[in-house]
Length: 131
Image (cartoon, rainbow, N blue to C red; front, side):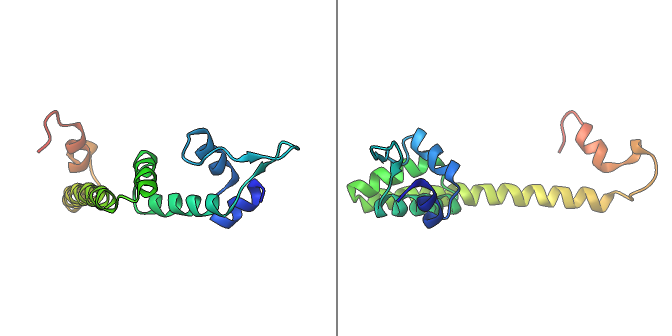
């Protein structure tokens, strides 16, 4: 199959396929005598793997490692990588919840009218050492 068919089968844009090839995440395809790229079912499966891993929050570098571990069939290392990603996501969620709480507090304290100097949101953003 050609690049357009591959992209459609895997649910990614053509530019994404080319990007992954340039960065070695997708192996260089076989070239036909005409110069067109030629892909197979393994390429579709690999692209779907990459797309699903990205949807779970893995970076391209993480995915490169997962693909390597997948090739090795090292399930224990794959599990550890997934556990590390989960820990990272949980930490980011906790940070976002802290930010949400602080922003909610500022919004509640702001009357939405009056002088800018009295605005708790602006004051919090301009403080040297915010609490």
